[in-house]
Image 1 (cartoon, rainbow, N blue to C red):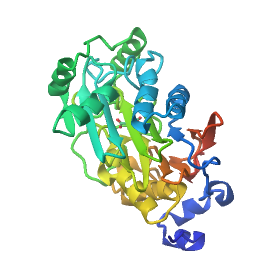
Image 2: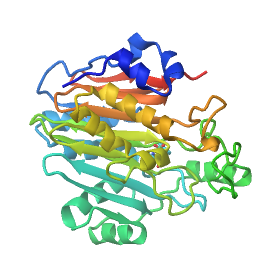
Image 3: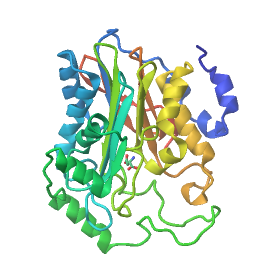
Image 4: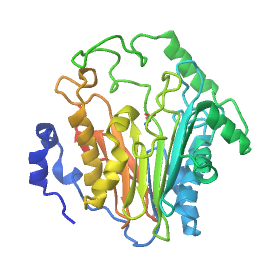
Length: 353
Ligand code: ASP
């Protein structure tokens, strides 16, 4: 196992100048671990305190990590106040809620997902059924809805008044705040809207857990990018992009601009970096750096050539060590290691002004 030497790491990064602005001591590579070895641990995005409580309660009773994380995120999917996930999620540009979700089960090395699923508020449960009750890994759109109904899920209107009013406001104020682009080259700036100043796209829940038996599993579930082009699929239901789990190594997932993870296969990269010996923090920071280094589209960059959007990562390894990272400073993830839910500030690539 070779831990990256901080000096060598900084030398190799193309974003050295910006990286050096990060307060290194606070943010680079502390070994965060579960103090009570072999005890369950779960990590989630900032909107997941109740999900973590539930997941931990179940794992303490002996539940498998997948049962625990799915039961946890179901609480958030059911919550109309969370406009990023499940019931009450912000709709696509036609005002229709379309949900994406996927699960991965470490001990059986299986996974399943659904994308652009309408009218079913718990896409994570349907994703799990795709894994357990079909020969497929991913089912989308109309087919996903029919699959869910065949398994007894009830269709319901997922659009709450709160989400509909937000959509109407967006619709009534359309300018460049949509996802259509005119003809352009990768060198054109100011095409479409800037993601960083976008009020509209954040939100998803990811949850990864290590259970009492030392098994890992994860789930990511979302309403996706708000006011997206109908049929748009983000990273959340795509194994390797919005989540990935290898029972021998670790589990990882993401929230933020899904297109960046689709292009960079970030979650599987994080797991592979952990396999090579990187800590969860290191691996998540490398994923942030990979996205920034490989971006060539000027419309997605600020004046200093840094990506103008954010992506956040969450990871735990087989030893119960955990970590995360975000491209831009200022966010927190949640961890439950038995002593309650705690917020942890993300290590980051660039400091927000
Ligand atoms: N990753 C999600 C997506 O692109 C959105 C988010 O996490 O905010 O669909």
